Image (cartoon, rainbow, N blue to C red; front, top):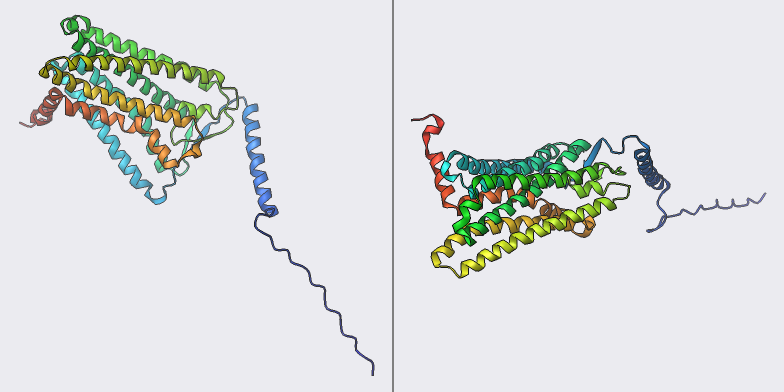
Amino acid sequence: MVPVTPASPAPVTEQVVPKLGCRPPPDTLFAVDLRQRNIKQMKVTMQNSTDPHPSVLTLTFVEMAEIKYVYSTLIFLWFVMIVVSNCTVIGTIVMHRSLHEPMYVLIAALSANGLYGSAAFFLNLFVNLLSKTHTISYIACIVQVYGLHTYGGCEMAILWVMALDRYVCICNPLRYNSIMSLSTVYRLIAIALAYAVLQFTIQLILTIQLPLCSSVVQKFYCDNWSVVKLSCADTTVNNVYGLFITTVLGLITGTILISYLQILRLCMRSSTDHRSKALQTCIPHIISLTYFVLSQLSDTLLNRYPANIMPIELRVLISVQAFVIAPLLNPLIYGLKLKEIQVKAKQIFCNRNIFGVN
């Protein structure tokens, strides 16, 4: 009998189990490498292209999924409130000749500027809220940049003229009619607005000359600094000019604050009736100025820091104050605080002949 030799066991192949923190699978590495190469290629293409700007920019939106229609409805209603309230103030002042005085003309100018800024901000927001891509053309982005920044500059210019008007009215009342005539106020408004527009036109010219190496804006709307940060070129000139604008706005704000401090100091030494009337007139101006300056300052500071220093929801809330709250705040505080506008507005809405009803 031939002995049977037992077969040797087959060699066991050791199975390597990937451990946490080890090198990722090759397909993942390939995908990451491909993405990085695509980004580099996009930058090279944009730098070598005859057109230094991408035709389309991508905006950064908070993920809203199914509730985006709820947000769209709420924002639309808010926009309607802004339009109705500002148009009411403007219409009331235009339709009543007794309100054709410097202070009311300035309030109407402030409301008109609020409509302008709201249109620049909300119209593009509606489109992007309802779309799936959240993109904006480069030209539309630049138009929005110009609209929002000229709105802010014109707001400060009008507030400066308002402070001058209140200062002359309260601190030098005997010469008020000769100094602050209606024609003088119109000229001051025109000069202030022209300066604000010219200032930000120069800033926009500097911005559109920059070649862009990225197409992702780190906001859900376009402002100047968000576009400048996309550039792959030297932005020293833009930064210096931006600092110049900030300094000028700071000086304007300081001048306005000094004017109101002088008014308040005079009010404290006046009779009770005079003090009450002066404070009732100036408090809405101070509230409007303080809120607008703080909202603009907060957004400017946010632009100078990385996007990950705070939750994106909080960044969004802070960055939109000047464009969402201020245009509605102005007509509300002036409509509630100034009795003359209240009375005339009620006359308009209570007069049934306005609608052709006897």
